[in-house]
Image (cartoon, rainbow, N blue to C red; front, side, top):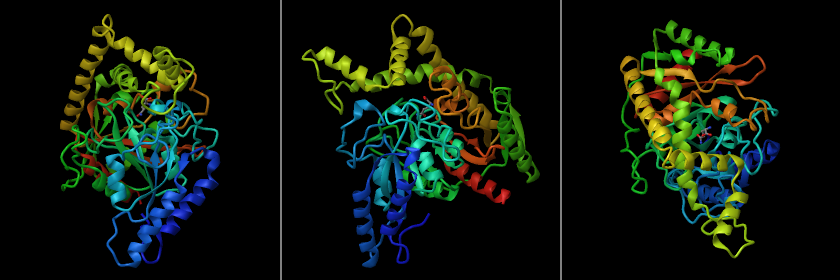
Amino acid sequence: MKVANKTVSAVRLVQDALKKAHEFSDYNIFTFLNEEGALKKAREIDKKIARGEKVGRLAGVPYALKDNFLTPEGETTASAHILQGFSSPVTATAVKKLEDEGAIMIGRTNMDAFAHGSSTENSYFGPTLNSHDKTRVAGGSSGGSAVAVALDIVEFATGTDTGGSIRQPASFNGIYGLKPTYGCISRYGVVAMASSTDCVGFFTKDPDDMDLLMSIASGKDSKDLTTLDDYYNTETTSGRTIGVVKEFDNDSVAPEIRKALEEKCELLKSKGFEIVELEMPALKYALSAYYIIVPAEITSNLSRYDGIRYGFRSDDSNDLNKLYAKTRDDGFMPENKRRIMIGNFVLSSGFYDAYFLKAAKVRTLIVKEYEDAFKKCDFLLTPVAPNPAFKLGEKVNDPVAMYLEDMMSVSLNLAGVPGLTIPAGKTKDGLPLGLQLIGPRRSDKALIEFSKNLREVEE
Ligand code: GLN
């Protein structure tokens, strides 16, 4: 990462990033550009450097912030109409940690509204375009962040991953994307989607930057009681035995992705790694369980948006109930409403046992299946999604087709285990391919170390 010092100034780094952001405006990456704020911070850092004062490990490094992290700069809207006009009085813990080290946020990035989606087409601001093909989706929900890094506008970007929203757009744009172990990074100040699966993570161009960001952002936070102790910064060893999942090797996976996985396995074998094939039968129920558990939590988390407390209000009624209903009707996107309805349905008294309770039991089976798998191997290597970036408009009106794109990513969130997207070449049409490295809980550092080794093996 290019850090500000006596030869490269922070102002220069920020100016370059903002210039690129403007150059690529047709990709619809940013919902807000922090031009004045970023330059002000950059000038402060340059002054400190000139005075010989100590600066942080990310001094002057421009970064992009997914639009669901709360900070006072601009409006935090989660790319949803119902949050238009909302400026946060608080700063998310993850953001504070990055900025304490001198990182500079140059803009907020576009996303599926409230992070519900896999293509960024559910954004109130319209879709972000893929970095390698403007007729295709960026992936989602963190599409803007992935494209900002892939087009080299910023050195890194933040994301959130509730069911794949970092790993899938990273894969669609040919970069690294990490969903850490649940609880590794504080969720304080992040707009909640599904509290039991939401994770904060990053997009980077290489694993070394990921390592640095994780060492800064991870750790216990008294404002988020689900955070774990600071295990990330302890010594670790990298793995030698890699598992592949039999259930993910089928005709619903694009041939080019299967080939990329096969080639990676061959390469690993030739370098002395052991490849083992594992059966994980409960994984085929992960998508169904996810699309019950997550909407149930969404229903609860979105109940706070009532037109009174935050942002937008449809204000044509003196009747409070009508005001709530109209605000929510006008303010939520169709996908948000669909999830609120599914969530209420699966939690309702007549259906709770048949849906929510059953999904919770499946979740326990998935947790156990991962635990068993990691008795037989150090990491798993799988596709991230069944297809490379699909065409804009291709799936947005077919929610089930869109949900099916998540079939390989959601089980990690249900189990709380970490997953790292690594680039794995391109299709013959030049679309990026990615693979997903999965490790046991708290193996984040080892996963990153392994991806560094893999990069060396390939060079
Ligand atoms: N695509 C998944 C969903 O729509 C995951 C979203 C996410 O990780 N925020 O639920």
